Every structure is written in C-alpha cells, then in structure tokens.
Length: 528
Image 1 (cartoon, rainbow, N blue to C red):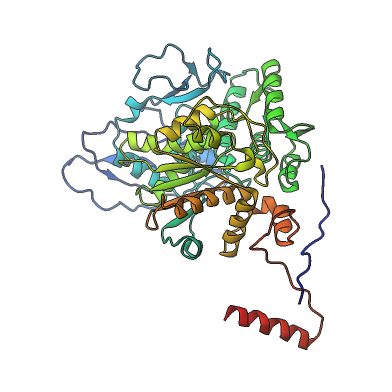
Image 2 (cartoon, helix red, strand yellow):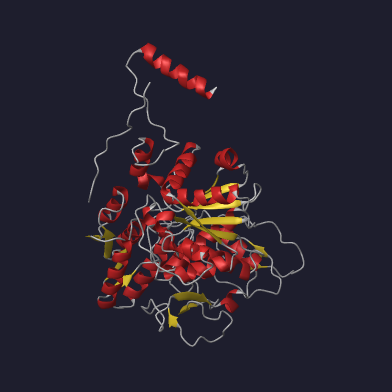
C-alpha cells in the first residue's frame, strides 16, 4: 500500500518575602523550617545536622494573594549581596574596577564598545559555604512562596540580589524537567546515561523565559524609579519575541518586536501578536533586524532586550544550576547547547562556574556548542584554531532561531569554551532533521535546534570523544510544537534533496475490513 503525502496545510505568511541570611559560623549546618525560607545555622559545627523540622504553615487569609503575603513577611536585608555591570573579560580578582555601572543604569556596552557582564560580589556570597547554598536552593523547589516558586528567582541572591521582590515579573518559569532519554540513548548511541533538559517546557515554550523574567523585572523596577523607559524592544527569530511580549504583557509594559519577514514559523509569529506586542515584519534577516533595533534603541527610550543585554544571561544561567540540582549536585560529564547568537553557551558556563567557585560542586562539565552548518561562524572560528573571527552570511536553516551569521556574544562563547575544554560541532540540514526524527520516534517531540545538538552528540559519540558511560545532557531550547511545519514537511517526504530516512507518513486504506487487515498484518509482521 503506497504511502501518500501526510498533510496539505495552508501556508501562512504573515516588598515581598526575602529570607534574612544569618551570619554563618565557620562550618555551619542547617535546619529547614517550612514557615520561612531561612536556613538556620546550628551551634554545633562538628556534629551532624539533625533531620528537618516539620511544622505546619498557617494558611494565608482568603483576601490575600501570594505577593501580599510575601510583602507582609518581608524582613530587612542583612546580607548586603550586590551586583554591577563591568566590561566583559575584566579581571575577576580585581577589587576595584576602573569601569563599572549600577544595574539601574541603562547601558549595554563598555566605553570601548565591548560587551558588559554582570559581576556579583563574590566575597559577600562566599561568606556562606556550598552546603548553605545547596540547601537554600533545594528548599525552594516546588513551592509557591513569592517569588521563589520560579526556577530563576529561587536563586534570587545570584541573579538580581538587590531588586525588591515586589518588582519581579514572573510566571514561575524554569524548573523544567530533565528527561532520561533511555530509548534514544540505548538504541542509537549505546548510552545509558543520556539526558535532555527540556527548557522548552516553560511559560512561552522556550528557554528565553529564563532571561526575560530578569530583564522585564529590572525594566519594571526602572519604570517605578521614573527612568526614561517607554517600552522594551527586541530583534527576534521567534522565541525572544514570544518571551518578551508575554512578560511585558503581564507587567503592562509596551513591547516592540522586529521580526524578519517570512522567516519564522506561524506558531512563533502568533505569540507576540497575541500578547499585544507592536510587531514590525521587516524585509531582512535576523542580523539586519538586530542592527536596526540597536540603532533605534540608541535614539528612543526603548530598552534593548536582546542578549547583548547581559541581564538576560543572569536568568539563563539558572538552567545550569537546575541541572546540578536535578542530579543531586553531581556534575555531568558533558552538556551540549545549540548556539546562534551564543549568549546561552556562556550563560551555562557562568552558572556551572559560579557553583564551583562558591563550593556547591568541585568541577564543571565540558561544554559543546552545536551550530547548524548553514549558520556556523563559531564552528569555523573553532576549526581555525580560534584565529581572527569572521562573520558570515547565514543561509536558511530549519533551526531558524540560530540562523545567525554575526553573533553578538561571540567573545562570551569563546571564553566559555576555552575555559571548559569545550568543543564546537555542526549539523547539516539533513543531519539535524534526521536527528529530530529519531528523537521523536523514541517519545520526544523536539525542535530542530535540539536536532542540531543531538547531531553533535551523535558525531562525538561515533568518534569516541563521548564515551558510552559518560553522563551527558543535551539542552533542548524550545518546544517542538513551535515547529510543526518542518515536521510535517519531513514526514511528508516533501523536503527537496532530503531522504527523510525516519519519515512516518500515514497509510491511506480503503474503508473495508479486508484492506485494513492486510495493512495491519504487514505492519505487525515488520515489527515482529
């Protein structure tokens, strides 16, 4: 029985609670109390900690919401944690930076035109040991206490320590599942410890929520301080605009989105439209949109929301901390991240490195950045031995969110890879689509960008670089439902010059018992 085309779709063009942190003894142990997020140090530094104390938490009044409840329980900050902008690459050991900015300033570049980085007061954070931070973060998981029910804001002290929790705009993002890819690992790679971090299982369906909650919260703070910010803008290939528009809508802040015309999926386009963003569809690619938004935000009081803004990375780094939490603070051997504008690979490095520096873990994983071969400037840079970086003109790729030829965070990515003994790999269009088909056939439903990361894994596994027993995490950056058109085209075997080896089109059968039985018998025999 012949297989036919699967679908013929219409193409569309188009002051709350903040824990008071104690002055810790030299070797503190800790006890949880469910009535507060504070972890109290015991007076016996050399004795084992007692079991957690279980007490019931009083139910809040019916006319009080969680933000009101948090505000009522708010106590005075005693920890003096802080963070500021410094030029990226500035000496981490320097006690006094020659150039630094408050996070309340609207600044995106250093005086030399380079990138900025958010630098935390590590001396203040180091007053609490790794056990303290592990226990504090773990105590907040799964709770609804504002704002700690968020996977991002459960690490508030490491993200935006000085923001008032009443200014935070959150959808309780993060806390995404770490999926054991049992069948895919065993069947295709001979691995039994392969995991997929489903960052797309978040509020708007991508990892961009993690950074956008931080950025929009800071904008909310700035507007309350009467700073000249009339709205927030971004260039996007889809996911950034979805996250920006959703969080701005929740806060009542205008959002402006520059999208490359006819280059994103309808599922991605509809999100900013539905959330009330002012959407400009521009006849250029992402790099062209990025250039325009930078010029516009230099002239108008619109806050720039792209990953050039280092606030975004403070939220994105919490996904790395979540991975460690989900492994009970055991460090995986490898973490593979798709790369386009390249902020996310640095964010993962920053999260892992911060955990190591503050004593939560004793090492960091090796990082792999995976790029589409049609948009692979970092891969070419890596293969040249890190010779002078040369931007390229990105070609069309099914992994549209990483179709970027001149990435803003190139310096950040190189730094992260060099300091994690990292690797860069690439995936052709056929490789990434086949990898997506393989993954989906084992129960996943991933985006093409995750297909890029899985292709990198397959290549490194086949070459022996990644061993069969290595604990490996592939970061899935967006939900597969955003990319149904590419899946339809693949399973319809309608992609030009592509074999679509794992296509699974429906079989058209006559409406009679004999025909159905013949088809089913053939199918079941093939599976026997």
